Length: 70
Image 1 (tube, rainbow, N blue to C red):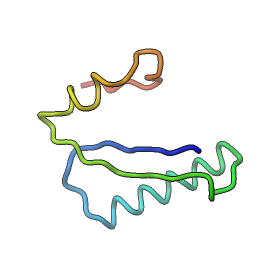
Image 2 (cartoon, rainbow, N blue to C red):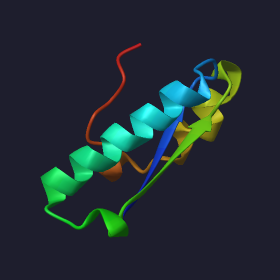
Image 3 (cartoon, rainbow, N blue to C red):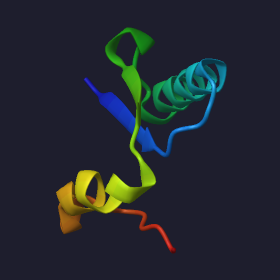
């Protein structure tokens, strides 16, 4: 607890995704003042044509704190 699942369009290297996960974890450790052993991060690639149905349509309105602007 917590687990962060980053969803994004495909196309980034494994190195970039691993670095993103590492930095996200470091940020969460600092921001939540938690031990890093409790935090996990995954990166999931979602094709652009499936973004609306696979991502946006599954987020509850009250849980979306920052909205995309596209």
